[in-house]
Length: 280
Image (spheres, rainbow, N blue to C red):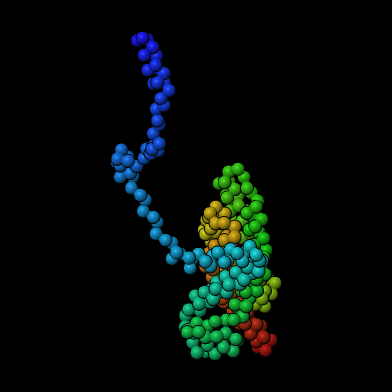
């Protein structure tokens, strides 16, 4: 009897189902009290202030880069004209800074120059500079494109050093000969005077170029992107063209003084030669 009662109870217990909880379990939070110390120990980074104030400065460079990509030759030509104009204007201002006398003012006015606040502005000289800059703009641009695509070795230092050396040995002397020779030729000088001008100016200008352009060229090929290399070099070239124009004008004055001294020496000799037959 007892065995039957036990088996009946066992069947009742096995048939009875234990109900599962229908309440969904909530996932453990990672931001609980245990992680409170972690969140407080790592504060949020303060956002960087807006750089919108730089937008007016960056916008012209972006526009120049887009123009450089669309029309590289036209952009280079216009850039060269602006550079040579500013360079020649600065050189005229420096070389003509001393106030001219009334006689010199009248003489320069007759020759087409303009007196501007104590210094004389020569439009013909500016026109010569613009012509020289316009003719050399595209060849110079093509040269630096070729130089950027050449001499690219596994060592970046070797590549930059080679580019700088080739530019100083090949391009700089040729360009300086062209610049000073054209300045002299457009002024109406003879072939011998052109050669003399080149001899007086090119060696000095080449030595002085070694003081600035190797560093400019190395920095340009290392850090400046290709579309902006010309404008970077152009900013430096304004000062360099000022120096070249000033050096050309100084050489012209020295040559003129030398010719005057030679003429002064020849005149007494000619007068003495003419008087000798009369005295006899």
